[in-house]
Length: 197
Image 1: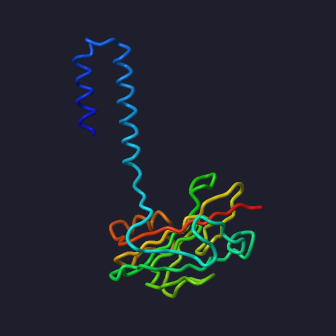
Image 2: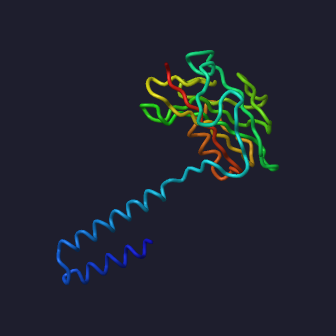
Image 3: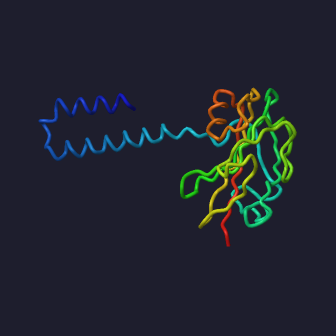
């Protein structure tokens, strides 16, 4: 595609005097628009599903409302999660929960790494051996949904890794994402919705 843009541009540059100026400008605008769209598509790198890994909850279905119990309007505890399809060669799991709809940018609610290979994470708990990093509430804990207005999406992102992480316990989401690059065997996402009534 890039070569086509280059050829068209060179052709218009050399032969443009045979065409009316208005037509030349129109073609250049169209080519520029196509180029911008192509670049935008290349920048979309986030993978929502990789492998057979699956994350569900008995508390809410994917793309459905999170019960108030698990938010700042209730007990503010983490919901129960069920994990399936972990690759056999996985050494650990990572869980990141964030809100991309927060008004000041993505807000991180929970960061947990070195989760052992388990089939579930029980309500209001973290598996033995797992490490909770700093969320955007500056706590080593789960912070439930608490949107200021409207309905927000809460992304429960699970990663299966071929290693266990050796990072500081005060690490944040970005630190964890940097550490897992090149070590992701599978990943999946569970989305919960919440709005304050």
